[in-house]
Length: 319
Image (cartoon, rainbow, N blue to C red):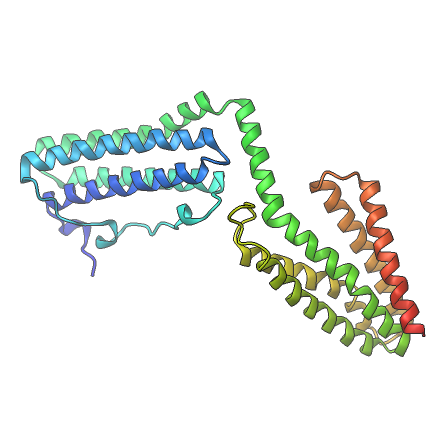
C-alpha cells in the first residue's frame, strides 16, 4: 500500500523529507566508501555531500520538534506514490565512477522536485520557507558539485581516475573475454580440422566444431567463474566474468566452424582458414590494445600457437 502525495499531511511531509535526507546521506556514504580505493578524490566529494545532507536533516528535525514534538512518523519514499525506483548502484563493487555520478545527479533532481511540490502543499509560513530554501539548496547542489569537482579533480587526478577505470575494464571485461577468445579460437582448431581432413565432409566437421565450441565455452565459463570471487583481485563478479569468458570461448570456436555449413568441402575449408586468420589478427590487436604488448610480438605469439594447433589437427586428421 502506498499513499498519494497529495493526501499527505504537513507533518507527514516533514517526516518524509527527514527520511529522504537520511536515505540520500547514507547512499552518498556508500558511494564514498565504494569509491575510496579506486577514486579517493571523488570519494571525498561524496563525503562532503554526506555532511550537507546531515545538515538538511537536522534543520528538518528541529522544525518537526518545534511544531509536532519528538516523535517522527516513519514514512519512506516507497510508502508514497510517484517516486522513481532507484537502481541499487551502491551495492555493486567495485563502483563505476560515471554510474555513481549519474545516480547522484538523478537523486538531486528528484529531491529538488519533491521540495518544490512540498512547498506548494504546505500552508505554514515557516515550513514553506524551509522547504523552499532546501529546494534552492538542491538546485544549487549540482553547481556545488561542479565547483568541488573543479577544485579537487585536477587534470592529474582525472588522469589517475581514468587510468583506474581502464584497469578495472581490463580486469573485469578484457582479460576474461580475451582468455575465452584465445581458447575458443585456438583450442578448437585441432578437432575441427582433424574432423574435416579425416572425413572430407563439411557437415561432420561442422558438428564436431559446434560440439567443441559449446563444450569449451561451458568449461571455460565455469573455470573462470570459480577461479576467484574478485574480493582480493578486484576482477569483479565471478559469474559475470564466467559468462563473458564462456560466450567469447564459444564465439571463438564457432567462427571457423560456420564455414563448414557450405556443402562444398573446398569452399568451406578455404573460408574456415580465412576466418582463422581474421580471428588470430583480432586476438593480436586486443593484446596490443589492452595488454601493453607490441602488435608484432602479439601477432607472432598468437600465430605460432595457432599454427601448431592447426598443424596438429591436420596431421591427426590425415593419419
